[in-house]
Each structure stands twice: as C-alpha cells, then as structure tokens.
Length: 465
Image (cartoon, rainbow, N blue to C red):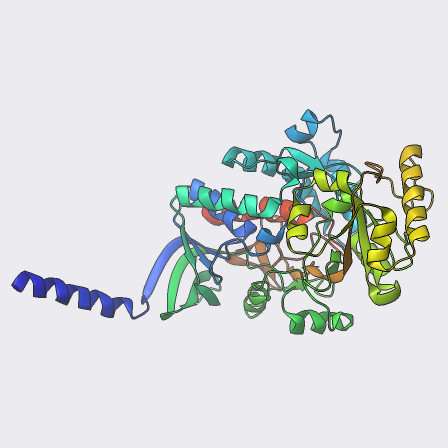
C-alpha cells in the first residue's frame, strides 16, 4: 500500500510540475523557425558539434517550404550533367539580376548562385531526390531541380531535412512561439522568450538564427507597404506573418526592399491554390476569356501577373494537354481538388469555359506552329518544350495572389543581421525574413536556392560564433 501511495504521490507531483512552464533553458544555438532555412541551419550547426534548439510556432515543421512545388534553381549540377544541360553559376547570376530588375544585392546573389549547386549535392547527400530538371519563368536554362516525375519538391525536402535534424539530435519544439529576442548588456544576442500552451519561458543561447519567413500571410503588413494589394489573396502558409521582421526591427535591425512584394500569376481564385510554374514550364499556355493568348507565359512573375490583371475579369485560363499532365505529378493534386476543367476536344473545352471555340482552337494551332518552327513570333516565348495536341485537354482558371515578400532585414555575406551600428553580435538570419537577394522580383526556383544556401551559412556561422 505504501508503495502504491508513493507512486501516486510521484505521479501527482509530476503532473503539477508539468502544469507550469519551464523556468529556464539553454543551448549553444537557437533557431527561430522550422522551415527550410531553419532546418538547413539546424543540420549544419549540429554537424559542427554544438547543441541546437529549433523553436516553431506552428504544430508542424516546414512553413512556406511545404508549399514549394516548382523546384530549386542551381547551375552546374550533376543532375544537369546527366541530362546534357549546359549551365553555369554566371548565367544563373545574370538571370537573377535581370529578373530582379538589378535591385538585388550583387554580393548576396553571387553567393547564392555559386553555392546553389553545392547545396543541391548536399541535399542529395541527405537523401533528397533532385534528379528531374525543368525551367521556371525568367530562367534562360533548365535549372529547376525537383523529384523524379515532377513531384512537389517542398514537402519532400522538409521530410528529408527534418529526419536529418532528428538523426543529429536537434531539439525541435513545435507549438513553441518565440515572442521576443533578448540581447545582453553588450548588445549581443543572449536568448529568447518563448510562449506555448503552458505559458512562457526563456532560453539562453550563445547565438540565435532567425528563419521565420516573410509576411505574405499578413494582409495588414503587406498592404501597409503596397496599398495596391488591398483585397489580394495569398499563397502563403498561415505562419508567414512577419513576426521575425517585427522582433528584429525592435532590436534596431535595418530593412531593405519592404515594398517589393511579388504576386504569383497562377493561383486559382476560388481555392487560393497555387498552380506551380512548372505547368507552364512543361508547355502550358494562357488564354483569356476571348480564347486568345496574351503574354509570354514564361516571363517573370511580375510581368505575367500584370498581364493577367489587364484581362477581362482580372483572371485567365491555364491551358494544357494530356502530355503536360503526364509530365508533372502535381497536376493530379489539382484534379483531385476539382479545379481542373477537362474535355475530349478543344470545342468541348471552350464551351465548358464559355470562351469562343474558334478563337481557342486558333490560339492552340498558332502556338503549336510556333513550337514546330522553334520560334514564338507572337509573344517571344523562347522555351517551347512541346506541342499541345494530345487529348484530353485541360484548363484551370488562374489569377494573381501575394506570393513572396522580397524585402526583409539586412544581412551581410555571413548572414549576420545588420543595424545602423553594424552587425548585431550573435544574431543571424536566413530565408524570406531577409531582404536584398531577389531585388524587385524573385525568379521561380530561387526561393529554395536562397533558403538552403543561406540557411546552411547561418548554421555554420552561428556554430562558429
């Protein structure tokens, strides 16, 4: 009986203790945010032998990286070599600067493009499948890496990196939201205040890496910086509310390009489902409500978004055939959602969409002729992977929605957060919480290159610090 009561007393004491927040904790490196950049940083820091705690406010890891479908840009990879694709970091750099309207910070773009192929091989070493290579808007070469068969890349990379972090003993705490970053009396990063279901607690650390993402899911914030986005939907994960930017600016961090906010042109208006750019990269075209093409579908996202907004109804249709469908597994997800209109003939599809059948047929025939000739004289599309002539045919209504916030906190080449007085000691940042890398427009496929390259650097630098 005494033993039984001792057990019950111990259980009661444990219950009482667990009902209160932990008073304090410590780690060598704290990473705020468990998206792609945070997981990359965690793996690199752990590999250098330091203790790592990752704090994530959501009930799952991944953030916006889970929403990435198109792929990861890198030039000069083994996957490209296998497929006979000639590319180089220099060409990737040129495309990125041109796509960003030369507003990009050149030093950061150089790091991203030089290190992207290294990052692809690093991911492969962790077990990632990046064997398929396609092209997204604004790129002059096929350099967008994704899993075999065109499966969505983001969930795959999150799973691979999360498992790698767990294997290394990284302490990942979900539903633990950082609400304040602490500096010591000397102005160096010292710890964070965390809030969870039990209350609040503090963790001290020798270095902090902020990888909380952008603010694309915070309409109040993105409208503040660009009033023309009032009423726009978003493709972002609910976690992308700009928390990290707010906390870092409270510490004096500098900001850059906050008014540079990208809309993704192909988002289903009813479901807010983002249709990956890879559908266009694999051959799809766009037609308006008159059944006519109106833009180079592989132009940069800002240009294509603007062209769609100029059309009747401020939306358009993404058109493709069964060959495109078969080339990209992501299309099956759109079909399961019920947002794809299907028909056995162009005439039947036109009738289902309410567009002029003769105009749609003419637009498709003209595009197929351009593919055969290898030159799109009407709109200057240089990437013409296939004719659209294999029935059945498909269409998805699309329009622009807020997709990526190019602005954020200023970092240097070592990912150290910058203030008016220089680097804030012990404080690093990577991913969409930062600004300057993408300039006035991010190229599709460059987000994953950004978060993996700079996430790795941040983890390395924090561990060394």
